[in-house]
Amino acid sequence: MIQTKLVRVPITQPVLPREIELRDPEFYVVSAKNLDEFLKRVEKESGTVVFIAMSIADYELMSYNMQEIKRYVQQMQEVVVYYRRVVEDNNEKVEG
Image (cartoon, rainbow, N blue to C red; front, side, top):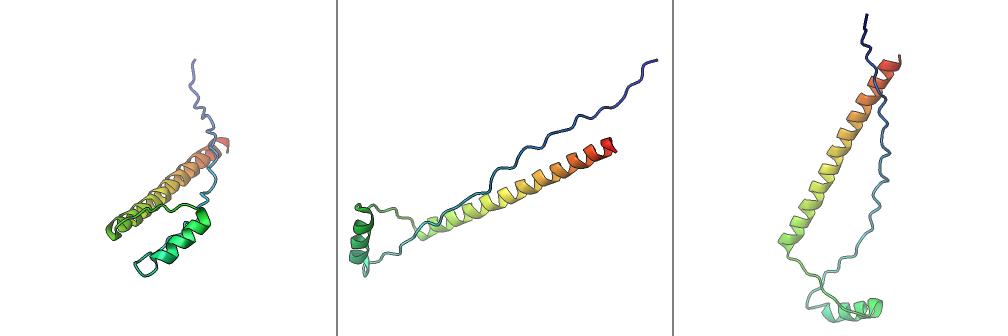
């Protein structure tokens, strides 16, 4: 007589990546009133003056995008935690 026995293979959980280490950039608000002072300061600190500019609307888009990335990462983390729990619970049931 042939009998089938269910054998569950333990699933190894991957190591979670290390946490994100963000660094704070500096933002300067430059107007016609403080332009000369700003240029002198930047030349003294870095030797070269380079401008990167964006409109207020584009800054708001960048802020929105960062919030979307944060939301996505948090939701993916919840999914990972859920599956870890399910797999661990199943492994405990099989062993017990």
